[in-house]
Length: 159
Image (cartoon, rainbow, N blue to C red; front, side, top):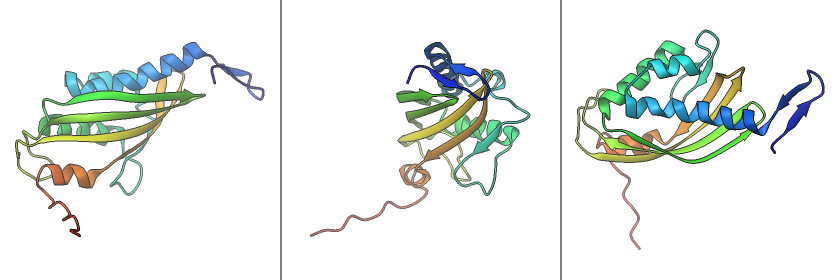
């Protein structure tokens, strides 16, 4: 869908707006490679953003979100993020990425293992007036912990 017209508030989403929204979300992943939290400050509605993140019991605050990203960068300083798929419709952008890096620093209490990690993440962002106002993130935390050796891998059944 390239054009959506909402008759109630006469708001129109053009293909140009959809591409702009996708770019905003892609920029959020640049934080990991550039190690620059100021990037986030330009992309999120800091005072009103609702952040849904696995492992939290409610909404994550914007400050906690930035701290979490800082902790990831410290733990995986050579992080790379590849945007594999991105779809936009209306105010929403769904992004599927592959994250890779080396566990070179403490992560959630686990010392550096120097192991390479690779995992996929899906985010759904809602963008209003050029700012992210809500974000849902899903990724396989268990796989990440297994890859750094913090949790044993499951044994596969032998036949």
